[in-house]
Image (cartoon, rainbow, N blue to C red; front, side, top):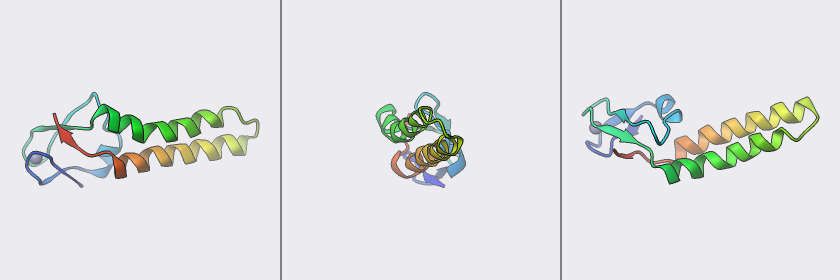
Length: 89
Ligand SMILES: [Zn+2]
């Protein structure tokens, strides 16, 4: 669970946060105020994984394509969960 910037209580689950984009605020489970992630933070967490996934498209071998795509996806979700703070809407 991730802490709400308004009330300090758990606001959303990890799964929900992994798919939280900068343009889509969600209500905190405790106080119902909107929380979101800021666009620069979101972009910084998304770019490395996206770059790896794009790089995968240039490989001929299926193994490299699937392997790199998976690494990119894990990187994207991992960075998002660890590095992107929740902010007030
Ligand atoms: Zn709250």
